[in-house]
Length: 226
Image 1 (cartoon, rainbow, N blue to C red):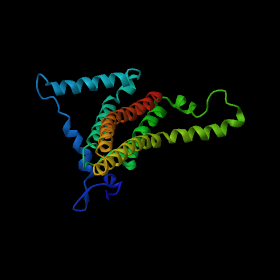
Image 2 (image 1 turned 180 degrees about the horizontal axis):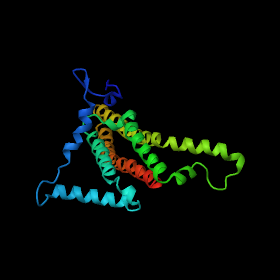
Image 3 (image 1 turned 90 degrees about the vertical axis):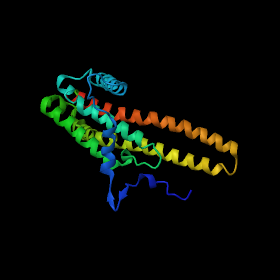
Image 4 (image 1 turned 135 degrees about the vertical axis):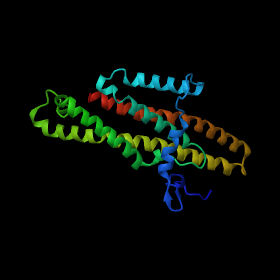
């Protein structure tokens, strides 16, 4: 296979115009909105999963934190559906782009920090200096805590980007190996194809888990600041 390994991560264009915005908005049409008195099974399952996830994430939050429920549920649905659609052949996964993930992580993180400084000013400032710190270590600890605070959105974005990108690269490499081995050894090619199928199933789970982890970490940042 002469195709570049990173071709699938290049932002697609149509007549020279990037169509990434259309790809980002596409998952929203996959979730049906209830318009009947009695919902069908698909809508009922969707609503049950949303209630279950929101209950698990927001059960320990204060009233102020629970106002973020719509934001968090929209976030997990968007990331999860985008990751799953990216596993389709010849498709583009926006969550493999670090710039997009930073664009999601930084505003959400900044919102949680701003909420903390607004409603829990003393507690938020106390995080920069643990109680009982020796006086000579105060400047160093303040710098370290400040760096750890500002690195949170970067860690969120890099974790999601690295996990999704690594999975796509593995599928690409093993798929290419299975195709090449078909003309050399049928048995080896079949074993490689079996590994590819198992890896694809694993990537479906990773796509959902990474959406949950990203949203859960944002929820934990919110919990610390409300």
